[in-house]
Image (cartoon, rainbow, N blue to C red; front, side, top):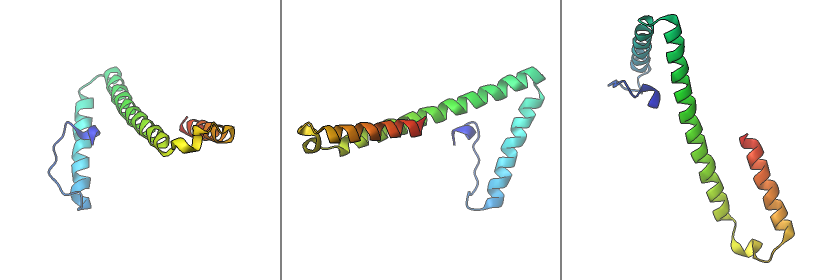
Length: 104
């Protein structure tokens, strides 16, 4: 919804034709804004919008990753690792490394 934070559209998202009309209006408005700019300024604006979106999604992903790590740490109970089991520590290290590889 952040991508449409400059627009207030009162329509039902359950009725697909209302939603399609609203999105069409948003697109037309963007095209109108772009048409008043030089080609280079259009490119700059679109690139800025893309960068803002990507940064927003990266922040969201970082938040999800942090929450995942915290939850994983909460699931690891003291009795399982308190005895210094190298097998447990080795398994934990492998699991965390696998998670990091999946995320990258």
